[in-house]
Length: 595
Image 1 (tube, rainbow, N blue to C red):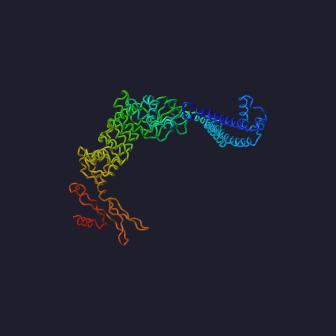
Image 2: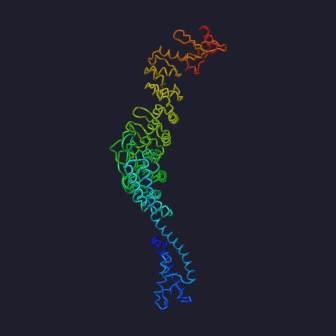
């Protein structure tokens, strides 16, 4: 009967101990009376010494007398009114008392186990309370903090008895799934994220969820904590708390039955922005982020439904807002255009996985905000290389321009994200051969020296033409940007007739002359100053060192006139030689060496 679930184990165990005790007492009493009844000398027995004619008395009286002796002996009371008289009775009592020692140990041991098992949790709780009190006293914590610690431990003790997850996990998977469906499916169906999701997916998610009770004032997830789980409130209340440096905690909202939290950080792979703390004793369903993503990817229709529900519910969240992006109002919930605008938010956060899921749901990758910036613009300017790869994989338009006329290429190079620029340039140059020329001419037109330098560092041909047939140097000369012209000339741009663009011929000649002469290279000997020889406005030499240790001025010579380079296709660098003694010698050397 101890295994019969219809009866209480405690009371069955107690009844068993009582029955064993009574049976042994009864058996000992019967044997002891039999010794007196069968003994030849009736008066020389334990019962005959008290009542010589005991056989003539009632059987019930004789049984009560024997039972009385058995109980007093077993309980070690031994009043002495009934005692052994002959040797046989003495021997029997010896063995009976030895047997009673084992019987007493058996009864006490079983009763102790029953009592200890029934009070084990209470004893552990009291020990923890005692340890907490000693900790508070040892560290001299204030009374207010002590009361909070003890109150929390009391509530935690009460909540432990409600947790049932460990119990139901022992059952087979089929039974466990059925229990979860009965208990949690009605709650999960009410959660906004799963609106319109198929029942098959919901059943799969419910089977993956873990139920747990959380006592009041306990932090479920902490601010800036890595997202690992998503929670659904079954009962109780959960506060949304914002914690800022050097400021008090601020409650920004309260979640109740059917609400969900943690899904933003999980789907965006970013730390939690808020702390979620239970306000009262709460039952929560915990779902691993990996299980949620797996269920979303299993069925395309459910994936689309989850993403749309998420975007619809969170379209105005501050933690998803991108600087400079204005969410257009007046659109009905669920509008595809409104859904696509959230691609801009996701591109800004850098969550390539979630961005890929949105694009797989057939959202427009080229959607623009009020300033014409597409997700590619934002990802390129923010340096999110993974997002750029995802957008390119979904065939976004690399050549789209915002209201300022900037492409994603321009945003990438102006933000100095070189790896993203090279990636985009590779894709753009395949479909548009004028990509390099357009970028260079745009930088020249805007007189943006920084961007021009970055473009030239990336190896773009300085003489590349835009779709109108103009080079960057021609644009800079037309706009009369002297510093830009000088930068382009010094980087080897083909020089054109300055009169065509009303640019100062003298200024251009000085730039060309400076480029042809080159920069001075100084090689100094120990404790000797560099030598410099100036002839008019032209540096004709640079200090070098001969094999004999004597310093000599040197000069770079180039083939052909600068204005004739393009026609002669002579683009090799100059040659550094020792400066001859006279200008005629220099002309002769150059003519002979480069004839």
